Amino acid sequence: MSVIAVYPGTFDPMTNGHSDLIQRASKIFEKVIVAVAANPGKTPLFDLKQRVSMAEAVLSGLPNVEVCGFSALLVNFVKQKNAHVILRGLRVVSDFEFEMQLASMNRRLENKIETLFLTPSEQNSFLSSTLVKEIALHGGDVHEFVHPIVVAELQRLIR
Image (cartoon, rainbow, N blue to C red; front, side, top):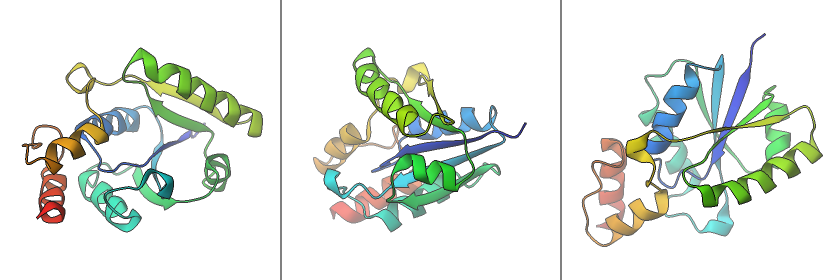
């Protein structure tokens, strides 16, 4: 059975934690679709096109990974892509309550879609896009937290 997983997020920007989780998921699933959410309510630093482009560049070495931007209801996007799994990352225990709520709602909306959680690699357990942006916006060095392409885009945007 071919299993397609959708890994949704804002990815503003994509961190090494995101790319590590995607790389590990690509070994488990036939195909992983990285669904970059428009999510204007979060006021992203990068627009959707930039976030998709960076994700495509960062993940270009993974042949069974596809990157798509989306602004639809997640379960509708998942069905459109013929996927049956929503993949989410859990960094800390405090993430679980919100993620459980989302998973329960998604299951209620579409009971044929399962949510699976992956934990980060130990070296990425503290990483978040919010922290990376904060460090970069205050002139800090983020090269160990994000791909060099993302470092360059952050530097370009901040200048």
